[in-house]
Image (cartoon, rainbow, N blue to C red; front, side, top):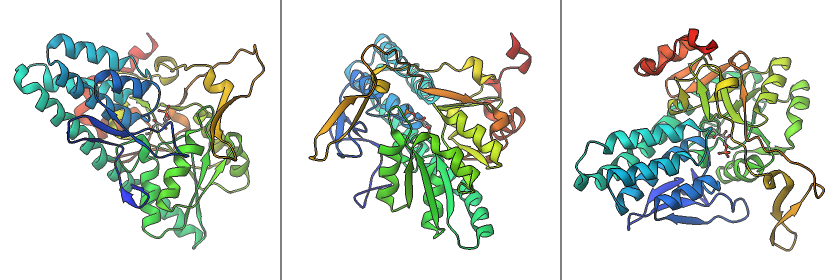
Length: 373
Ligand code: MRU
């Protein structure tokens, strides 16, 4: 998508084979790119959330493996890099998917060929994500078109949570791709952007990228969605996800579950958009089986922003001595999900629909009888 009018991806290879990316911790106040030179750099960038969002985490980890191979392409070095990278973020399954893809591409290859093969596979993973995100948009835009047709020219209000936009992917972004497609087709689409405490990815990232593309949007405090739904101000909710189970349960940024409950109570369709690399066919019961990342308490206790005289400052918002907890994700059970917008179409959130749409993944799927074990 666009940064200051120029088409930009979130990750790329520089002429010297280092990896370029956007430092997302500086947005929206400063747009700055950074270079990753080593697997350690990639791991640090993922952990500190300079790069974040499930598909981008996967692509960054893939490039991290290429950077590792550039330094040392031995089996031991690649395994070290794998272990380092997989430990960075536990909930986003794209991370494991991408690392496994890289290992499969490198493991049985002569050492002399590994560096080129690693960059090639990482590039493919990034390119594939762009194609997938675009396809998600082509399927998802139909949902917005249908609503627009019924509203006879009135604006279509989409509510989204966190940042599942192009900044969270390589381009387009799962939740925003349908929105960008709708906007580009001339549909009057408006986005309610949940601020998404504690890190405010909605307020700082989604609002920024929608603004860069000229999409009308309004940032709201996290607890506003239910009120808007009660008053008919939300036509559809579209979020992203960090992991979808084989039965359609959805892990996403903390607070997503509450939006799904409010949507159900108000008859508002609740869609989740995802590349199939986010589906974990080895897991069935999302609430009990998906590991939920817990992050440092400072993200809750502190808030960062720009002062009126232009300085970026962090301030403490809780009393000294108060305990804080920082659960980064929650799980929305499949029964609350109206549909999953994937690159192969809009699916019901069921085991049958997922298995039918992705038959090549069925070998990984677990028998539901095992769910209770
Ligand atoms: O903790 P983050 O910022 O990496 O979480 C991002 C989200 O929750 C997104 O909705 C998600 O990664 C899926 S969509 C790209």
